Length: 290
Image 1 (cartoon, rainbow, N blue to C red):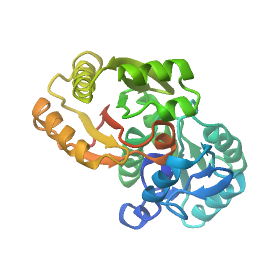
Image 2 (cartoon, one colour):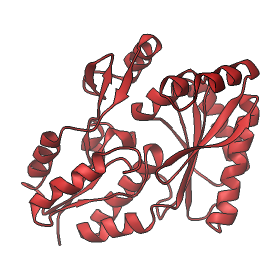
Image 3 (spheres, one colour):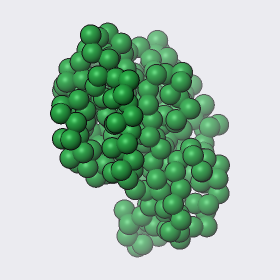
Image 4 (tube, rainbow, N blue to C red):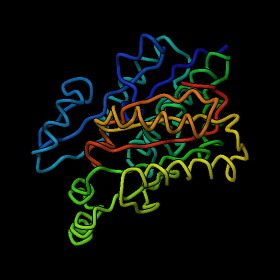
């Protein structure tokens, strides 16, 4: 039986400290704050990040240096027969295309997965990959499963402020100013590799109701699982734990029988939407929870 290492990055919401407990390997993602480079969970944590985000002129994310990725592949192949690498969706970063190129040097022992996910849904894919590896599946079988099921997932997000979407160029200054005056809270969606506007709300309560309706629609119409069987629902947020706990109670009331967990969104998303955001996700999965 092939010994397969599962490798991902901190865009999944996992951190290097999770390696020991989960048996999953995690690469920290680099970012630049006013031209200074930091690595998530290595030399900057979430409280530090959000404090710096308030005053920074420029915050950008980057992909791991190619040399670091190559070194990690080589390190893992010393103790494993194969590596399955699950980076951020190719539609949101060039990490995936770079990894494909690097994997060519490893004679089929490194399998790069582009399953079009990020954050909580990406983490679920990583946990599924680990479960499949533990079942004895090969690297190619794991990659095939994840890519076959890549579109069976949704993320809905609402933000507390339009400031960071404007700063990142996702809103024009005029639209951002009008939205602020009218107190519009956009509900965004991530389906596959696209971040799009889904709906507009005037209050956080209305935004949460819109997101819960969207989850119910996905369960019923996309996944054919009105009761949520075979699906995982989760809550995510940026520096908004209290509101996330309340949203979890609302989701549990709407979708009874689910074990709904709460996770912070990774910094790769937080830098674009700022603090105070709320998200809910649903994915088809053979796992009950993760």
